[in-house]
Amino acid sequence: PYDVLVVGGGPAGASAAIYAARKGIRTGIVAERLGGQVNDTLGIENFISVNYIEGPQLVAKLEEQVKEYGIDVMKLQRATRLDKNDLIEVELENGAVLKSKTVILSTGARWRNMGVPGEAEFKNKGVAYCPHCDGPLFAGKDVAVVGGGNSGIEAAIDLAGIVKHVTVLEFAPELKADAVLQDRLYSLPNVTVLKNVQTKEITGTDKVDGISYIDRATEETHHIELQGVFVQIGLVPNTDWLGDMVERTRVGEIVVDSHGATNVPGVFAAGDCTNSAYKQIIISMGSGATAALGAFDYLIRN
Ligand code: FAD
Image (cartoon, rainbow, N blue to C red; front, side, top):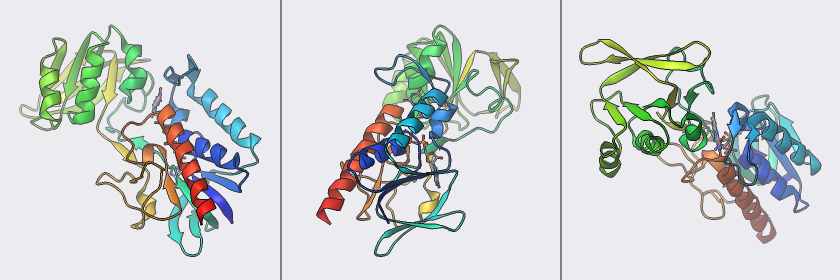
């Protein structure tokens, strides 16, 4: 069996595996897609100490460093079941069952998509999901934020300080964000809020040039010219496969303590699949390191 088996190979998982392997213990990492969401990122400007790096370059560096440590890397493998008997067991889609003394769950998350024409086509060409990451790319431009929940309104307030103008589009007749955020939003001069509207299409040729929406009251279609669309309709953790054993929040995020431990002894978690307050590469890597050290601590006590 492994001492530490990491499930998920994004920044959290890579960091966890490296920290574990550096303790000289038997470490494995199983991942559907090594690098995770970083593969989908164009330019990264907030990975501290590195001014600029492209997503695929960072993924290559993660893979290179993981290989330095003799970690057992199982790529293109999907975990489908977690169980605990004497050891913790992770079943893969191909039927194989991996056994380990401790497991670190780092299966990340995915942004919920709107599923409208233009969204997939213009991803990284004006369609963005992360204001902390991509906000500065739209300095002085007009953008839309789709989604009027807390994350959408936080994004709109954040972006209003950077871009020329922000239009918020909310499907429901009212914004769902906290009142304090709404007050702040409405105090800003360069924000327009559209409620009871349905996004129909993101338009453009080689990059985004506008957004079309339906006014749900009148059923009329309108079009706004702009250069960016931030989709903020939810981040979905990849935790469905876990069954009932591991405690999760209402939105499916794995609940961890300050050592990255879950409610199941020996099972740790890190990164975007957990209830961490913010979802960023540097934060995922930090929590991966925490979970690995937590797992090591657990191993020397049990
Ligand atoms: P992920 O990166 O989601 O990795 C999850 C891993 O788990 C993957 O290897 C996946 O294949 C694997 N996996 C999932 N389910 C299973 C399963 N059942 N079995 C096996 N493996 C599984 N952050 C920044 O800090 N700066 C940025 O500029 C930035 N830009 C971004 C741009 C985009 C378009 C996106 C989508 C995100 C961006 N982020 C950025 C956020 C950042 O990418 C994430 O916070 C970070 O990747 C989370 O790391 P993670 O390891 O927790 O999860």
